[in-house]
Image (tube, rainbow, N blue to C red; front, side):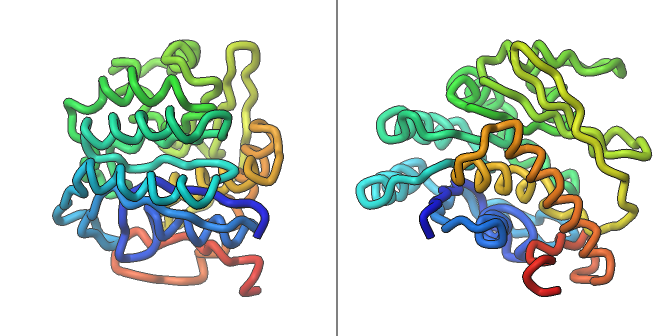
Length: 262
């Protein structure tokens, strides 16, 4: 348990996304999971029916408690819900997490289409937290929101880098092609990460799982690009392995422990 990963994210009682997915992914990929809860969505595989806030003071207290005792090797940030929580997370990480790699998922909308970030918090996310990130992992709708691009044209990847993060993994799962193509982008390189499209309804928590796997591999010392490649392989196999299961009435979870339960 030498490699410690901190997930700062929301709750998912159905176990496929959020902190629950992060814990499973960290564990399945060989890292120890630490958590800070930021929000309490009431959700299952069919969608989100309500969302209860965790106060910014309570989020701050959780972060201080972790960092007073344990230093993570890498940090994953998921759902933050509102501007107050974003600001307190940024303040705490500025104080306690110097030189710790940060992977940020700009969570705005769930797979079901339910909104998970207050609209007025997007600018705070862009200007306060994204510049602290070593990697952001937006899907196509999130990327368009971040750069205010509503066109049907290709995403301006340079505009994402201009937000201040060191690297972007632009997820292509919403593109509707026969391959799931993600783009790893920095100020100096662009590289496609491709895998065959898997036809399944079990896609709940895929973004959480991918970013958590990246975080785990970075904590273990991999360079960011290599971590993204390994995480892409992991999520592809986890989706493929889930095809033989049916958990829930909606979009089911991926099989995080496919390699362990074989």
